[in-house]
Length: 132
Image 1: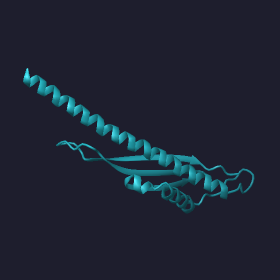
Image 2: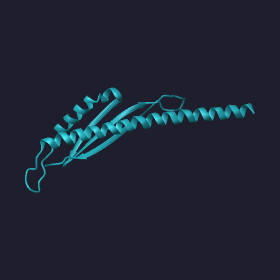
Image 3: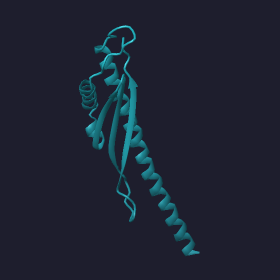
Image 4: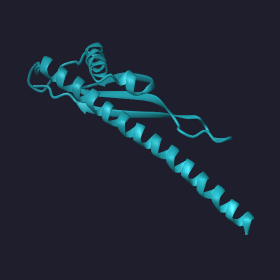
């Protein structure tokens, strides 16, 4: 009976460790998603204020450097580098669409033997810049 109780205790503790680690990764990922959404909206709204419709049926070429600057300003404003470990980001501009890619590392609270101590997370958000 003692072996059975010890075995169930180990299984339950292992389940608690796994659920806690997965929850931590999920919460960091959700925060990373929200930050990516905010960054792409800041870039798209900032670019929309700058560009005007060049003529009937045409679209203005969006400056990728300006999109990256607006994204960097937003990430600095929300102190994203303090909230995420090893934060890396990039901005892609294609036509009138701005896409922000964020990657980060989440340190997991439990480190049982054979389990990773951290996990890599990434998020991507895109927005269309309205050309007026």
